[in-house]
Image (cartoon, rainbow, N blue to C red; front, top):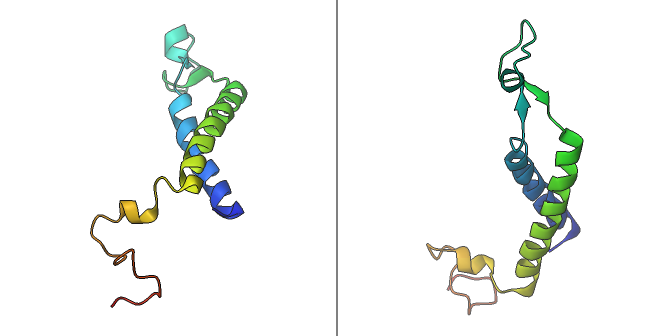
Length: 98
């Protein structure tokens, strides 16, 4: 796995994790009973995005280590995910299909 692949993998994991972490402990204006005129009752009052970003980074780092370690070790390869055998036979190493 190259540097670019590792960074893209981390970014994808980070954003997916962030979207899962954002709604945790979200306090809306409707929950607190202090709705500002012109806003929706579901608008966040206290979003704590900085804390959630740090939590997301910690979770993502752990998940990235597990996933990247699995990819680098070769336990799962791209050929394992080729359900329709479009990559051809794994024993052919010269790049031809026959």
